[in-house]
Length: 232
Image (cartoon, rainbow, N blue to C red; front, side, top):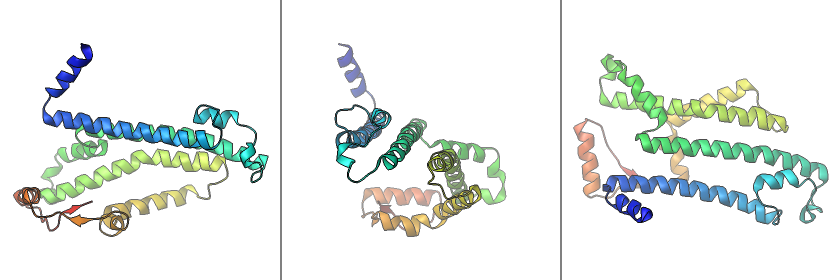
């Protein structure tokens, strides 16, 4: 009865809440499925009788027969320890990203967007050049992107200067790393959307119809200079 009561309660929710719940469920399902597949791939390809990815890395201290002809013990041991560290890092960083994404759905905005909105709310709209809605939107996006970059920075630093450094793969200095991160951020907020993203995703103009008309009406209501609308 409890399960059916819960299902009845779900169907009595508004369409918006049902869609929200479905999106949240889908997001976590994809995350858990991809995590399972990443574990399963190694599980079946390397040691099919040992359960668990980390258990494989921890307990498989000798070169498997399948790899004996192409890899010596020293290389295998280095690879094993490296993959053990990378699997741990990948799990925690992936979990953090999924939790952050869930927070974005629950709050209706990204954490960075919330911080940006808070900053704009602190009487910043009284500044002359921030009176325009478009300018406020640009500042909002800039602050949100900056916050997202800063929250991801510790993960990148740990991966580069702890894991990669530990296993002898890091060739970067801290100064070079920071300059490279700044360059990436500048590219992201300037030319990425117009010139780089189309190289990897297909952008097609939104066809004429009710949706496009409503978007145009909304843009006009806030004096936004809308020119083209694309579907990715």
